[in-house]
Image 1 (tube, rainbow over the protein chains, first blue to last red):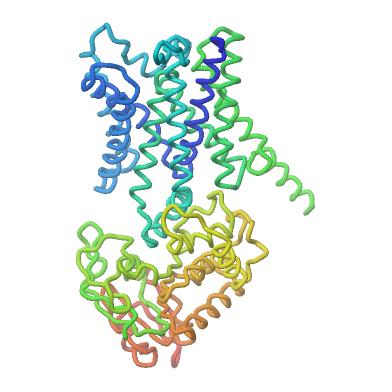
Image 2 (cartoon, helix red, strand yellow):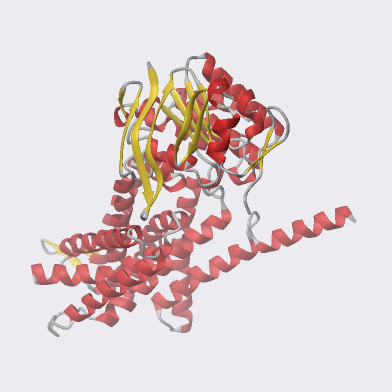
Length: 294
Length: 250
């Protein structure tokens, strides 16, 4: 596969994985938690590096999942002990991220791990960092990791579909039925952390936040069905990656940056033109109503 | 046998007690109105019984066994304002959620469950709306969706939190009909209610509550002027015989 094709595939997988999982956060009104987790996983990555002394995929995923769930746990703890929930997110997110930043300075120069890389990523380098098994080149590591995480996410969403749906819509009723509400919550946080860390290397924390939140928010404007919303969100993620990449090539600008911009563009389009919830249709409906009455 | 027995139930918000050493018993097959002024802890009582909020102390028995072993027997109609009605789902889907406890973890609702849910919607006169997104329903219709969900739970004891608030006449009728049906089937119903005018028409039992129970028992015995005065303090206004109007303190 060509260099461009690998980048497109990587970007699309980021869009798909983050789009589907992030939509669940949007529905739970927890978008800011995505912001928090996408930063604090840095600590997990650094932690995994100190334990294994390498930037290997699996330990990084595990480290990030642990710190991601811890982030959600600390936020929950502060929240339930009386700290306002947005403040709780702010406190936990900055402290854990800062700890990661401090620890990263102890990592030697020989290793490719620094704050700028973590925030911005560099998708352009992805195709060169390949996975080789017994001398065979199997393509970029990032693609394998993203594909793996996507499958895990789809597996969990399929298994716990009705539980996820109910705990999102009516957590009290779910608790009444004996559904493990907290388990589902932390499962979701784990999925978000995995998606984040798999996407991290290629696009960095900032695009991860965009890909987690914006496609879900866009899909929310376009459909009234839960399952369709999840699928649509993933598709919008892919679409954003593709258009963003085309734009970046055309104008020779940051790839990750223009992918993030593309998510924003699609959101604006949906916000204005969505047949059901767009402001244009709302205005038209209002206009029709008032002209009918006069 | 008592359908519900509550002993020594205490709930606090921060340090202020909302419910203090509440104890009462509700006989099987009764239709009980939980009555009391604003802030008396009526909704809190239901939520504490259902273990949706933490409690300081309290022993709750449902049909003679501890609450957590009897989940399947419990049905719940929360206040409409408790959920986000913009959630992307249909009326039928919400009713199906009433079956989730029976289906068990991971498994999917099958044809039988969908049939039960449709039947429940039909019973509350909502079958035409089964595919409607729930925000496209009126307040009364949303309440009926919640009723149908409780119906689909096929429970033995039902808890309803202010079901009559802000509903149309058709919905009010549907609620009353359903309560009567449940009662005839030998099921037990507890309803948080605040309209004193209708208490005697709707309920055969009342629980008068103001942080702790003032009285609990058959309506004729307990729903007396004296008890009401004690429950509401000075905020009652009397309009002749058997007719009371609530005058909220400003």
